[in-house]
Length: 59
Image (cartoon, rainbow, N blue to C red; front, side, top):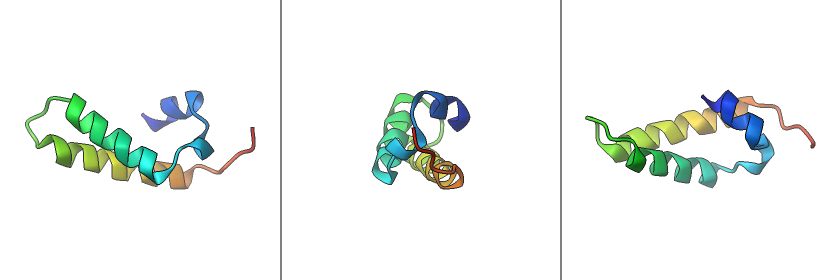
């Protein structure tokens, strides 16, 4: 999922705060049986981990 996102947004433009906000937004936007906040927070953590694994490139 993050690989698709990184094609449009350079990885170094994403901060931890952006990841948290994106996670919260998706958590609110995605209807689910699980609590939305938990879903969003889990996504944010996954996104931050993905960002840490991506080497920072200069564009």
